Length: 175
Image (cartoon, rainbow, N blue to C red; front, side, top):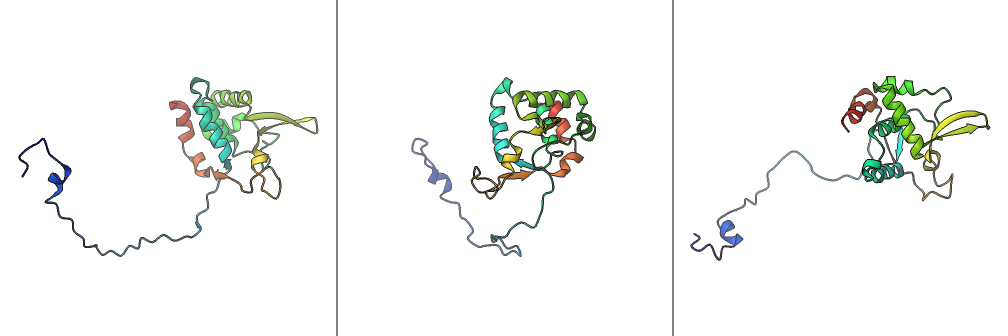
């Protein structure tokens, strides 16, 4: 029993506590197995360098990309080829209809992406205008294909399930 509060220590509170040392038997096995995953995530690639860029861009506060640009940027990844180019017949209204995000929001986001340099317009053979996600082709190369890369691709897949939810629409309306 404690008689003086001036010399109170932690052992005064824990001296009469007994811990059970028995281990409970269970059918569960908690061992770590070093196996590769059998689950595949289907969806477009989103490269780690782009993710890091967007995180740093978000730290700019009022000068950061608007949520409409982030949602549009994610949706564009579903439409590009291996070089990061959108099809010639691409229309913003297509992704607006598929995502249920208003066209004006998608258009505003796309203009912000053009202004920030994340998306640009290029001309194939000097004639055919197409849009591309900048640096997508560079990030999508393996070490065998280029000497600029450090030998491995670093990306994650955006799940196709994202298109079946209203997450991006809520992102745009709540940010």
